[in-house]
Amino acid sequence: MIGRLVESIDYGVSYDNGPVREYMIPISRACPTLWRYALRRLGSDPLVMLFTIINITLPIFTIALVGLLYGRHTKPDMSAANKLVVDLALPCLVFISLSNKSFDPISATQFTGNAVLIVVLSGLIAYGLARFSGLSDKAFIPCVMFGNVGPVGIPLIALAYGVEAVPFSIVLVVLSNVLHFTVGAGIMGGRIDWKLIYANPLVWATVLGLIFSHFGLQLPEAVDTSVALIADALVPLMLLSLGVRLSGAEFSDVSAGAQSSLMAIVVRLLATYAVLMISPIGALEQGILILFACLPPAIFNFMLADKFSVQPDKVASTVIVGHLISVLALPFGLWLALQ
Image (cartoon, rainbow, N blue to C red; front, side, top):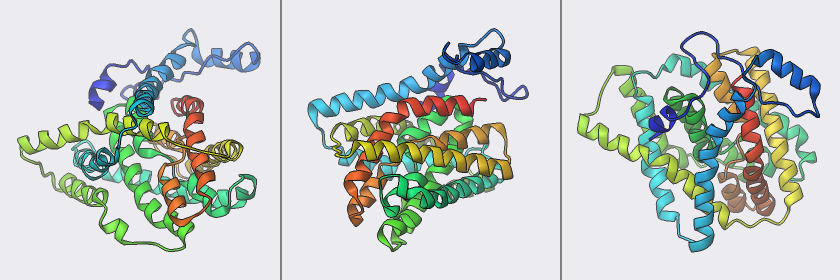
């Protein structure tokens, strides 16, 4: 499914023929200096980036909107579907992506290291700025450290960079889940439940995928096709589920949600560029990490806040407003990432 989505879009970028061609969003007449700078870099195609961003983000927001409208109208119980996504579809995609012959574990090692540094550094910066966020330290720091990599990050990265980028988004999903269940839960609750790690299907799918990749193993064709079909259901299900979840969300502190969610993106971007300065990587991996920095706060932040009674209403506002702000933040992130 991801492959068909990718093949249907003309991205205007190529990694096969040297550096990525640079585009920039047209700047309004209110910013003539930036507009002239953009024209110098773009030549005769100043609108290409705008249409590229629309083509990438519109399917994501459209499917989520369908889920939101459906949720408003029918109020379905998504618990069973969400469990299928987390326990079956996502682990299948993790395994398929990491066991693929084109996946390079050595390249992924530096990418993973940079991602860990970004998460840790953003948390440290957030600790120093928490007093300005409208949230407590325990509530704000995880919202900065952990973005919504699954429902938003996977389709965004796949549509922006193609199938070859999916394994890197999977690395981010696994990494975020492991750190969220350990560091995130530790920050909010003061303790770490290691059972959440070794009982997590994503962890075992990651291990199996890396083993198959390292030893060149393959599943029987019929089994491989079955696993791939289950994995194909992941992206639309996650986006529909996200829309349904947001349709029933309630929040009471919009100002704190807007302030903290904006700060979360800014802090992550600062951490990302700082890490990329000291540990440069390829253009593809760098763009993925920039998109990673612009994701809205993960919904699981609210679940942890509610479980440990750490300002759940304000965290809910941060998560919901963050997803609304992502309508602007994700195109901005794409503009940065595709440079």
